[in-house]
Image (cartoon, rainbow, N blue to C red):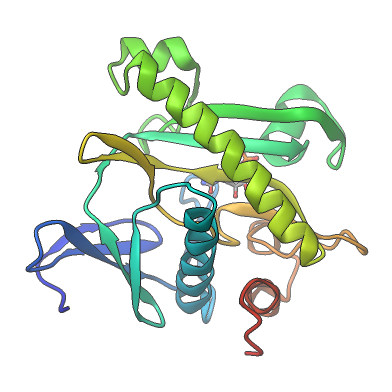
Length: 237
Ligand code: C5P
């Protein structure tokens, strides 16, 4: 399968058309941004880590009956995905207070939450991805009531599966972001699941092994991404 027209270039990925009208090729980038694009940089090898880690996690989720857009790995930094009609909502699931939630609610980072918390943000660079609720999603006609319930149920199931998967690899899944889309009338999981989109803390030391190392200038960014890939896929390098 070869890349056709570049359809979209985002902060972390490029999406290309293919001859197969049902599929896109996603090409991951090494570019890294944070704080609404105000902080810019790059993380060497991130394109490969995010592609291979997402591929593995999509397989794990499919095995548990969660449909995803993943079709196959094409190159180390590229995958073939089903052509989705993306629902422009970022769905965040949190198990532990950190980042935006800790700041907004005055909680100490690391405070465990009694149950998973699902949040929604409108995907909009101009508006800086404002937090919205299920009523907003409905009145903005981003998704209907049934789709919203499906998204919430899927997000919580994905959390269950991923939390257990990471725990076996001595990683604490603190929070993560998902995106969903429509495919042949069904809502399925899209986007990526990577250290860019998850907070992953080492179970024993509590060390952050995710994009917070870049956001907060903690150093050892590349090494942390590789460590996560190693634990997820068993790959040595
Ligand atoms: O910043 P905040 O605490 O709201 O982020 C929650 C989770 O969602 C983090 O794991 C973060 O990496 C992810 N996220 C993301 N893309 C965004 C916003 C948040 O992947 N635009």
